[in-house]
Figure 1: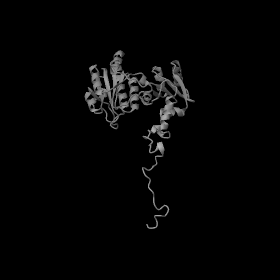
Figure 2: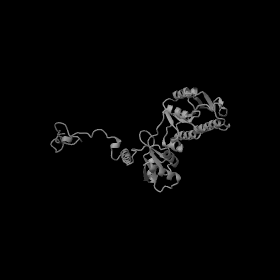
Figure 3: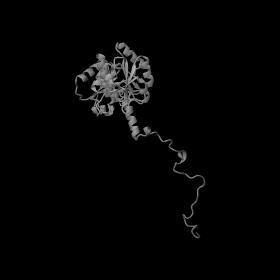
Figure 4: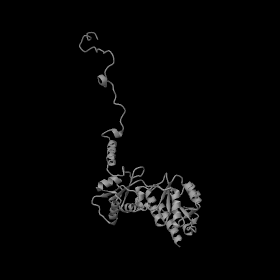
Length: 319
């Protein structure tokens, strides 16, 4: 505007060349900070705090290395007085026995301490809060045993165990049982009624976890468990070894109290908690057996059905 061009500040004088932005001056000009670090690498991120806590736990001077409650490559932590004592009696490998401060001792705790000391296993006293954290809040009764992951056996080992017993073979196979408590209960029943081994699939099925250990009351140390990749193929292998495959099925054509082949070598197949036997497994069975029940009850829990069947087989074999 006329007369304004001479007013101070009325005309903006542009600089030549690139202007300086927020990147700073000199060598730091327009330099970025690089890629965003991972969550574990950010000092105040919750993931970083969890990773640091895990590193401190792994550095604890117990000879077994890092802990793992869910199996895998690291050790497991068996919980409960009966499972711990049974595992120590069976002399399974162990690296540390954890005891809660102020633990009320009984004969099982006393025996566990004595067995661990005799084998040179580390005795570590921890607070109940620390034991709760280590076990993820699972019931531990103030005691835990750190052991390597469960060592599964091969299917031929179960055949050998049956043959060495001098009795007709009896195996239990689980078809898609996903609850480790059911697995532990089946293992306990298998030991109680004279079975020579348990067969479980590798995928889509429960494994021998600390929960299964505890539910088995430690009897998982007294019977071989084979983890196989294909149940149908393994059942056919059992048939080739002279076993009759008996599937538990509510619609089975044979009633359990009419099972005349109970004294023959048998494989009892227990279906999953929801759908029972899968189609291919059901077709592979030589006999499908139903458990007689009152009309008011439609079905039984998988582990209960296994226990009832094994008890009837054991009764017929004693007779």
